[in-house]
Length: 338
Length: 117
Image (cartoon, rainbow over all chains, first blue to last red; front, side):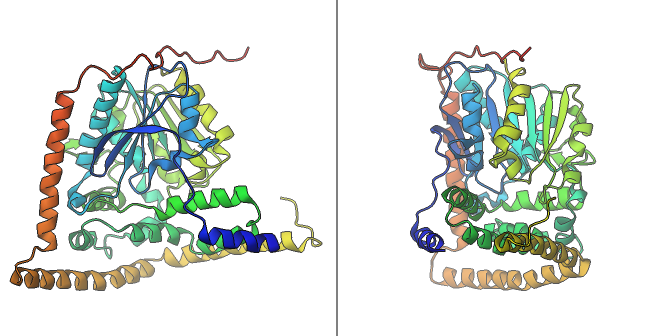
């Protein structure tokens, strides 16, 4: 009890928990688009570099939480050349950014930068959550390369599987046009609230568990890292949000291969590169049903699906991911990165 | 799952918190998943949006009267700066030298470990 009180007082004045500490260089910065290149941690690296595409709702340091619990650090030590496509909060004038910008501008721009810096044509693209949606759209619209491999984490394809989000964004009552036309970018607070509503009491019980474990420095550090990441949720560009709601949430067009970007239809069967899709068995955000269809829909002969115990975030960045998932990705990707 | 021993009150309390969280979340999801809830929630967000729009338009007129830039003017300026930034980026790429590889860059010759026999 005494330890809890002392630690509790310390927490009130503690600075932000440092995250994203693996050394990196910013190699492209254009409004919301930020491309980082991580400095190698290995004397010999694989030929094919990796581009990790972060979800548009959150900061990319979830891939690089802390030494010993950093997916980026793991990949670097395993000998990969790692780039991360991260997002800064979109400016007001970026409210007009749409899927066309993310899929036909930002990702190709990032890949061109990687090709220039590495001297390699091939790139492995990994996408997490909405980053996975952007990655599969890019892959489907660029079947001739330069993507060599596609790895997706908890990527929503069948949006009818996200029943609560669909109920709240029902086309009959949710006026997305008015929202976007009035606000421009969708505020981060709205995004956070929608996530919190999926588990309405969990924010309160998390504080109870924090108090219960206040004496445990490791627990508190882990909690504060995840809390910081949740608090730094990003606003969403208005047009991109409008398309997400109308085309994906309401009309479910990604699942029916009817989603059109830049006048071109996204047909997932056009993806023929090796694909590895990781699903989280207890994902309350992108449900198992929502992400399951990807592997059946791609046209690749070399494709693997892996369902892993864990939630939407813990499957990739939790302490258990270090042993449960990352070595499996390394085993699959290593053979395809030479 | 092993039963929590009744002689451990702290473990019982933790168990209770876990169970309560699960039950309250499930109950909350049931209520919030109903069509009426979504409709009511969305109606509640429309009013502040309408007020925000009306206030924004009134402010723009007021600022124009004072010969001051409105939000739209600033956003337009930001867009022009963004376009200039984009053009500079394009020029930089066009002028980019050969691949950025130095003597310190590790060789790209790694092979995966052979599986243990």
